[in-house]
Amino acid sequence: MAILASGVIALLTRLRTALGVATIVALCTTAGMGGANAQSRVTLQATNAFPETDFSSDVLRRWASPVTERTEGRIRFRYRWASGLQP
Image (tube, rainbow, N blue to C red; front, top):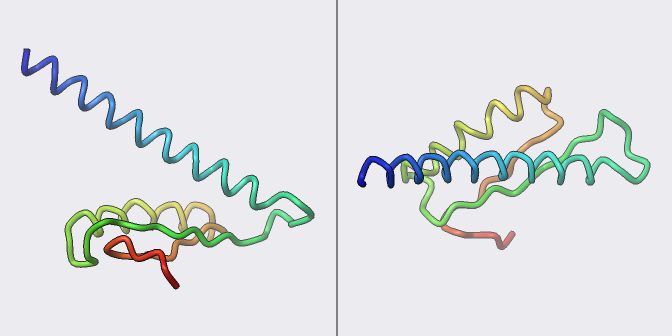
């Protein structure tokens, strides 16, 4: 039973990741509409409930870095640590 539960958790984690990527693509596509050209840049705010020194913050950076590289800098991220969404 534990093996089945761990398989379900792994599947849900992959699904959540795929939905997150799809959401970012949709946001970037929408942000690019309205007269903006294909070279426009978008900066997304990425937040984490933990401080910058936490391992999960490193995971967030390692996930976002290839997105910026693959889009040739058109999608960038502004990080807000410890749930700090205030400017």
